[in-house]
Length: 268
Image 1 (cartoon, rainbow, N blue to C red):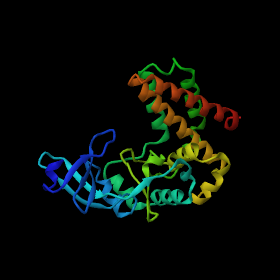
Image 2 (cartoon, rainbow, N blue to C red):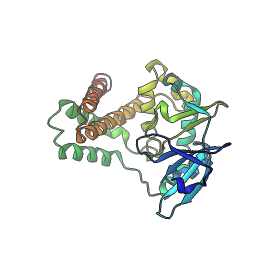
Image 3 (cartoon, rainbow, N blue to C red):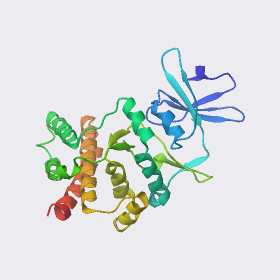
Image 4 (tube, one colour):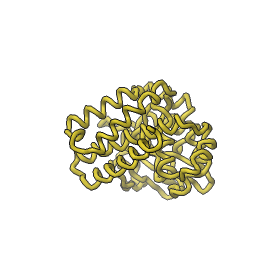
């Protein structure tokens, strides 16, 4: 990474799981630098959704290095996820044709919910998780029952990891959404459903959705829970495959909570 900079730059790891992010700084400038970021970063920067992209360089070994402005910003607090500014930013992302066209040009294609259900079933059966855990069986039953309402929905660019740590607020009040590694083309409820369940009190859901730009409907909640259950099943499988049993057990409890809600309030 240091080869991308002249001697007056100090380059230090920025932390994170991948180890591919760095801070580069001189006397009067700081940059956030990353190895092999997606070309998607350029259009995200142009749309003002991530901090400004300063330059992109291809190294001799084939690595692509990107440098963004390092912002004087902080992560949102969990309670701040209720703010209208978050809903407004998410609406902008979901309605951006530029983001959608770029992600499609990069080879991303939306998967139908039928395909996604088949995929998680195959994964669970392959690992013999289906028959071993009643929570998994209940979750799959709920996915089957709610499947029809998920079909033929508008497909948009979804971030797919909407947590408060990925939202940065500058001192000037500008909000950015970072960490786009998991982005896909999907039903927008995949994003705001997770946000509602994780951060917004249930009696505030209608208000938040109005700020986002949609009307609270029973059908919307059904789609939301379909994706929440699918997400929990995927995380359960992921942790089990890595023998991270404590985290897998947390997902089992999450599955139980989600499926109980669906059975008691939706599938009645």
